[in-house]
Length: 148
Image 1 (cartoon, rainbow, N blue to C red):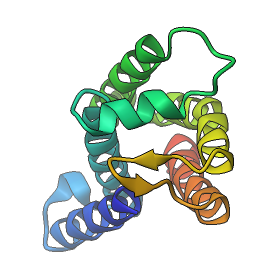
Image 2: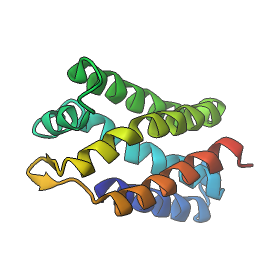
Image 3: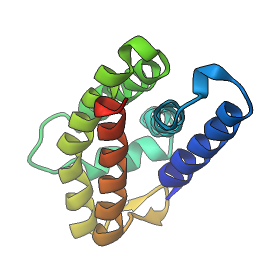
Image 4: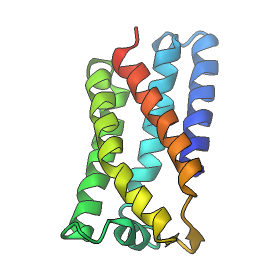
């Protein structure tokens, strides 16, 4: 739930700043970039800090090799994507790459829900709720990629 809250809060703050006259955030797409970047900063950093890292490693489907390496690589990609979102010239490509990354990582969420894992001592988000959030994240990335 924290990623969704971060996305919404980041968007709202950026939109208010844009409406208050800060030209660099003077569009909905600009505010979406900030919200999605904030979300990926918090999720990307979670790949490197305990106890979240251990939980993310456990979420990797058992059939995939080297789960710790996969968690490290996806964390780096999330942080690079967040940085790309903050630069208008690279934002569309960053959002597209993050959309593909989210699509590729979704099976780990399905696997974790089916195995009823915990993440940092809490049960993973139920699959239906996680799917709805994933759709919202993907729609946001698409809006940035294809937006004005």
